[in-house]
Image 1 (cartoon, rainbow, N blue to C red):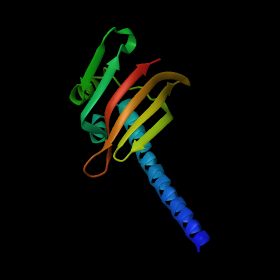
Image 2 (image 1 turned 90 degrees about the vertical axis):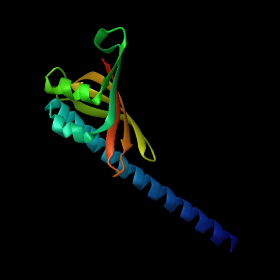
Image 3 (image 1 turned 30 degrees about the vertical axis):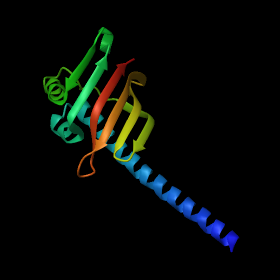
Length: 145
């Protein structure tokens, strides 16, 4: 009887673990899709598509970006305005996901953007699920290489 109990307990634990891993895999796939869609929209300077992928409180936090000595914090509106004006975006990148951490309805992602086969930008993104469980990018910390 004791052996049966231990086997049942072990099997239940394995089932719970497998279910959690499957759920995380699904969330990671959703997160990757949002990020890849955002990269494509930025490359095409498609602000309408970006508006759907960026959280309303989205911020870019650029520290010493492209040789500057300070930190720039850019709002969603400023980011989209610069995109429409052709001052940012327009470059297609290949995305290499380095690390994805998901905890409930929040995720952090470390990735590398490559252009012409060379590393161009290291990015740290934060994503949150909105009230409809849709992942939105809320923070972007780029490091130009």
